[in-house]
Each structure stands twice: as structure tokens, then as C-alpha cells.
Image (cartoon, rainbow, N blue to C red; front, side):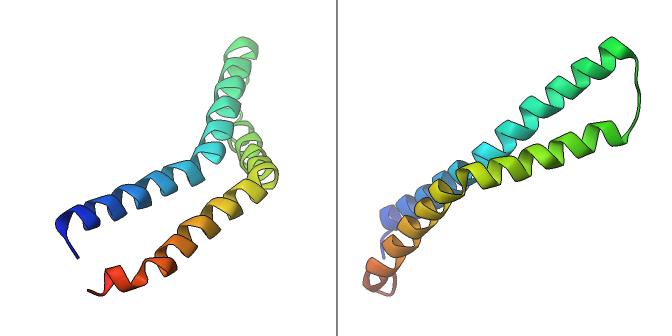
Length: 89
């Protein structure tokens, strides 16, 4: 196992993690921004108004992107198992 192999594996792991979390973070960010603008315009300062829409948006993102997320995780995992002999050398 060379240093280049370890760096490549670490980069793939980080890239996969970022790709897996991006849809949920994006939906949460957009929803949070919309709720913040709504609160600023209407002067409503209800604390639960900030969390409930974001939670629902993240669950919606999970439901919408679930097939893609699973395919990405399956591809990454099968790549690990396929290259397993290289890991133990």
C-alpha cells in the first residue's frame, strides 16, 4: 500500500461523503434562507418556525435522492471490496 494509494482512497472517501451530504445540506440551506427572509419580513420570531421546515426539507431531500444516494454508496463499497487485496498488501 503506497502513499499515493492512501491519498487516492482518502480523496475518494471525502468526495463520496461530500456528495452524499450535499442534497440534504442544500435543501436545508435553501429552506433556512427562505424561512429567515419570511421571519424578517413578517417580524415573527418563533423559534420552532426555524427548525420544523428545515427538518421536513431534509427528509424530503432524503426521499427524493435516496436511489442516487444508495447507488453512490453501493458503487463506493463495491470499489472497496474489489480493491481489497490492494489494501492488505
